Image (cartoon, rainbow over all chains, first blue to last red):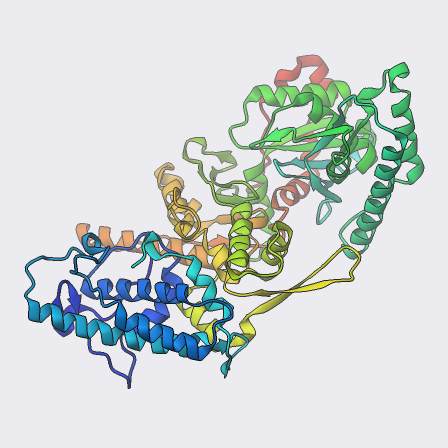
Length: 172
Length: 459
């Protein structure tokens, strides 16, 4: 049983920019960000992952992004500070697949002939994607592992331990 | 001819652990490391000896309590102090008497003795085969006289050997057992075959056949061994470099990642034995933990005087650690084949007429196969691989397949399956007629042990 793949496959005809599908973020139902959080823990243990379709690229981006968020945390950081840091990180580092500074361009197999307005649209989409992920992560990490209903002010160590692992040995 | 009435002695000397006991019993009387501590010839002070002696006697006590807890033990490891002090006393005179070859310890005592400068520890068995015959002979000597406390003349012996053991090694064993120990009779059985015999205790097994695939997983390596009608198919044996030790290391890494208060190998080992199980699906299992905190466990580490307690939280490693059999890439970067596909590969490299029997009877053996639901997961995964292939060939050929029945047998005697299989076979009435006797040996020489007739087990 290899690593898990995304279920948001391309048959839904999402707009695709730089091989990244703009899968709508829906706050009312299970969307791609929920899937990223669900598969994160299992997939971080795998070193090999084959992109079956474009949504797997977005999934990979999300998993690697969560990993970089966990690296911001430390065992004593409280919830408010973490929320602020996460938000700033999501806004400040708006480097998306296709940018010159994006480290994993070869892995994502980016085409270079993307026009400016499309790239801008991708940036906007991914920014929203990152903010949603960061918020959902905060609400999961700041809970007591023995009782997920209890909110704590220090990060759950069973989330923190995953900062030591790297999906495919890569980082954003 | 008292050996005809006495129970046979069953000895399974593995790379890591030796199991000793008498045929007919449920479990071995002794299980201890296959280790021997021999003297290095250095003289040590009397105080050193005394402290060693003390620690030995404390070991005896702990062994005793264990033996009481474990109802299966036939006798406890009780070597009284006088025996020890005399042994150590003779050590002082060893220069004069020339008895240094008697100054050694085996098993747990060897591990303790090796803590002093005076003794050096060695493991006479490497990769299942005897490396140091001199040490092995002394190891057997102590096993028989000090642990089992029997007269070899009065018993038949059933010994085990790994698959593909060279016949020269068997002859060497025969020489030691007949000439040094003067044992009444000897039978050497292949471990995998005994593991198959042990599976007969499972209610799943209806016909007592010696055809099946044995998955033997100890501490160092995991072997997949196909056996057809009592004979090992040597060319198809496959090994996985993933076993108990890797699981322990993985747990230790998880504990370190989380910064738990104690991440020693000992703690990891205890967590492995107490809490680990095999899950059907990783993502679903992670979700279960995140929804319900009761899945997390707690392990208490106490220091020696029981004055301090450390609480270790146990989480995802409960199901992730055994998962490395089924997804090796989560722990190792150089070995990537999951156990189920390796089992499938092994069976497919066997002659076509035995394959159905091999799929039908996949037998587990060894401590690292003891995880809850290990057999169930293996059966499911092998079944999936096989069914997929059948489907493909049906599509290509258009003919309907009769299907292949995949069955993994797990049973309660799995941990010491090889020993238990030996006990099972050696208690049968005909066992003694299959042994080579001392008289045979004297007449024909050591080469008689190159062949042993198989038990007539079909009925």
